[in-house]
Length: 312
Image (cartoon, rainbow, N blue to C red):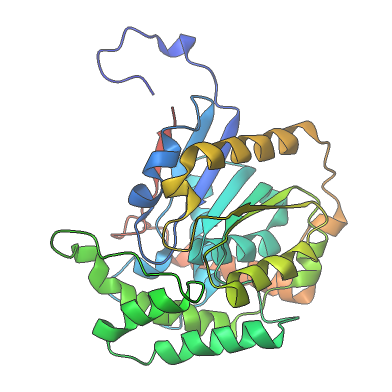
C-alpha cells in the first residue's frame, strides 16, 4: 500500500487479485515468520497474517481444540471482508488450515501447507505413530528442557539444531511450552475427516524440508498425497522445520505460491454438494465453529488480532 505522502493515487493502485490468510507455527509470531515472504508476493496480493488463537490469552483456552483455530480463521476472514481466499499454514498453522478446509471447504480457493504438524489420526503407519509418541513424551518435560528436546525431535537424525537467537528471550516465548502442549493434546483428540478432504477439488501444495524428521513430516506428506485429488509436493532439500522456506528461501516459495494461486484462479472448480460439509463430523465442526465465533466477537484479545497488509 502507498505510504503517507505518496504521490501514487489510490485509483492507480491495482486491485488485489489474491486474498490470502497466512497462519504461523507454534513458535514464531506471524509477522516474524512471514515478513520476508510478504515483501515478495506482489502488489496484487492482499495478505492477512493471523496469530494462532492458542496464544490469544495468557494461557491456552480451556478445553482447547483445533475448532478454536477454525473459528478464529473464519472470524478473521469475515472481519477482512474475504469470501473465498487462499489459505497458507505452517506447522501448527498447517494443521489448523487442514481443519478449516475440512470444515468449510467452500471458503478455500487453494491450500498451501508448509510441513503441517498434524493431518488427522487416520491411516497412520508405525513410523509416524512412533515419532508422534516421542513428541508426546517430550511434552511432559519441564519448560527449560521441553523446547530443546522438541527441536531435536523434529530434525532428521544427525542434523544439528539451530543455535538460539542472540539477545534476551522475547516475552512471547514464555507462552510457547503451554501452547505446544495444547496443540499436542488437540492433535491426540482431534478428528480430521479425510473423506471430506478427499472431495476437496481445488489445488493443494505442500512444502517439505529434506532435513526435517522423515518419520513425521514426510509421512504426513505421503498420507496427504493420497487424500487430495490435486496435490503438489515440493521438496526443499536443504531446509528443516526450524529454517523453513518462507524464512530462508522466500523467493522460491513466493514463486510456488503464485503458481498455485494462478492455477486456482484459472481452473473452473464447481462448488457442489461434494465440496460442502455434508458428513456428520464436518457438520458438527461447523456448528462448533459458529458457537466459538459468537462467543468471540470481541476478537481484539492480545495475540489474536490479524494483521492485514498489501504485499509488495
